[in-house]
Amino acid sequence: MDKLRVAQYCRVSTKTKEQTQSIDRQEQDNEYFIMNMVHLGKWEYVGAYIDQSSGTTTKYRDSYNEMMRDMAAKKFDAIVMKSMDRGWRNLRDWTDFEAAIRTHKIQLIFRGKSAYNPKDGDEKLLTGFEALLAERFSANQSAKSKSAAAWKKREGLVSSNGKNWGYLYKNNKLTVNDDEAAMIRLIDEMCAAGVG
Image (cartoon, rainbow, N blue to C red; front, top):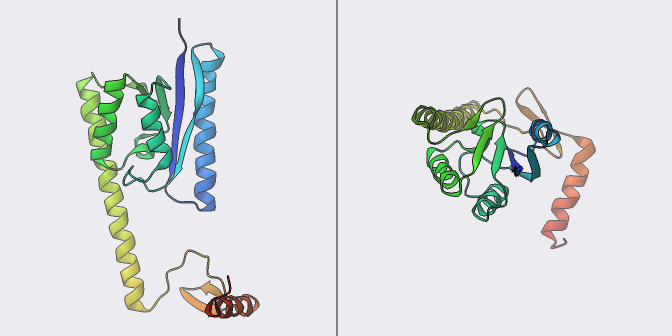
């Protein structure tokens, strides 16, 4: 009996420290899941596709697009993912992927669930709803973030990701960080002078 050649796909939205830890955990958990089957002699692990990019579209995800090319080239027989939202938060992208796995006869395995079966009408419908809900969730999160940013702007408050060189961020206010400000001024002066 031939071994199933299995790859994994992982994704997080940003490159923050927390998200980097999350993607490491996704990869480790997927690999643990896959290696259990490898040790039983049923699967062969062929590698990972990992993106740190938005889930709203697959268009700019390099590893995802490489995975799609490799799927067409029959480099693996199955793909393991943590969950639907790691792959798609866009119904159109999901339906394109679903068509590709049917065309190339690739199994999709969500960890903790059975393999996705596109021939099962109920499962296909439910997974389509899941993709639609993920898309809706993403749109709602975006609207909430934009609304919060607009409110902060109206109130004269600062939005910060915590990386404010030359400033300290506390209680929605920025104050000059004297320890870093001199370096920032020097960098600004050098740029203005055409250095660097």
